[in-house]
Amino acid sequence: MSNKKKQVKKMQVSKNGEQGFTMIEAVIAIFILTIGLVGTAAALTFALEFGAISKNVTNGKLIVVSMIEEIESLRNSRRLDYKQIENFGKVDNTNSPNAFTGFSTGFREVSLNPGEDGVSGTNDDLIDPGADGKYGTLDDFSNPALVRSGYTRQVSITNLSPTIKKVEVKVRYFSVGGKSGEITGVCYLNDEARITR
Image (cartoon, rainbow, N blue to C red; front, side):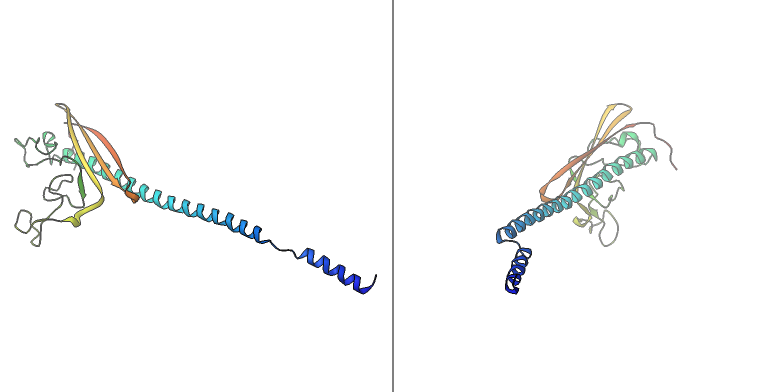
């Protein structure tokens, strides 16, 4: 074989071995990659949204449990008499050492402050004592900065018998995208306070 024929043959082999992607193959590869990236972005968005909802559910559960424990503690420490553990307007303060107005009815914003009475879930929770630091003076005001944003709470107390009450605490939480949920906790309270010190 002549040198010229060998060179042509080498060039043909080289051309066949150096083939790249066609334009159609490149477009299809980019399309498939784009679909994968869009799916990954959707998964990340879902994960972030689910994380926020999960955080709100956990905080809602903590609010429910702390409210139930506070009511039991009020009874156990005898800070409130059993008959005083009622919703607003139904409290019997007869012969009780401390006057109590009762737990708020309906859904109310959750406060970071228990208010003047020192009990969470009552009508005075959002009241700030003002500059003098004393409740019941002219500088008291309703302070929106005390609101635990994103949560509302309802405490419902039902007398099942003269010695047993059903305490139901509902917490509504709000999340991303206008979604909301509700968590309910229930306990039964009897009139036998455990002595705590």
